[in-house]
Image (cartoon, rainbow, N blue to C red):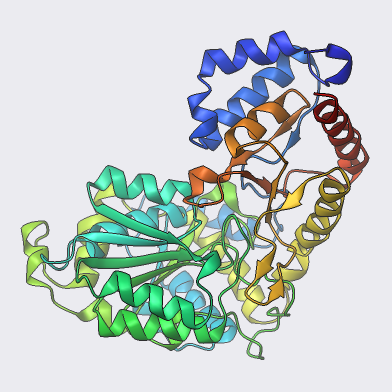
Length: 440
């Protein structure tokens, strides 16, 4: 390679890629790709444009800080309740009513050590509740870590890429999968990671009605809660409300992250909201693994308690105070994160102007929205090749193949850690990349 046409010394990039194994790029291992970018940055002195990891880029609100301090002083010698402290459970219940328009008693609102912990526990119990159902169905593309969880738990998995199955076609595809009788869980994110597709009410009703018909539990990952900025979901108790499958079935578990919408990633806390009917249901198959065959008891006391011991009391107290301010209308958490949509709009324009194409360009019949992620491709490249090649230009990303996408030519770009003042440099580096590719 001609160093004049690159941003980073190619020998540094090659050496570090070989050290950490290029297979980790193809696998979309975000933590290792991040380590590769860190090492290249360290050895070259070139600051990377970081698009590889879905980490918040906003300083969290100071709301709740005093509550954290008080909890540390008062409660540090006590174990946290495994199902959460009452103040937080009550605020989660209020939040669900005010922003999802769904009545869920506090008993069924449980803090977890991040949404990934809630997903782990949900998969473990929902995936074992019936002997004749042993498979998790992913509506892809999706969060690669959830697929790794299923693999780690020894549960079978199936999937399909939803891009070509919107509206009534979703009903037909889901029916085809569910009528086999082996699907225990349906799992998806909404808004979608990485494509930023958002399901319509019609589609959520399809998912919910079929989950009921075929007795599957829907795990709905709402990590990007209210971040479809095409609609304003920010006003407590007023429509429009965040779309959810919970309106259309009693077989659901909602995972609501604090990391993205609330920029609270470092505290590792999420909200798990379980249908009251599902929570109280008995499944004799659970007795093979747990002391109780009641779904909620197995979930909280047989899984969460034994894997984490509960969320730290100080973290719960701080998040409870944040939610109280949100619920009372004093803190508009959505306004804080709208900048992600603005970044996506600028970045997509820069990529397109430099010869890239948006991979998931439609959300049903509408253009894809601007949010936390978007997807791009460049002619002549598979996603893993493109992701690796962009490292030579100081740009990090992950290939779409790692997300269950059938569009293997693309990469996922996360906007959160790209600063507005880096946009001209992104443009410059992509111009160098495009010019180099045109010369070959």
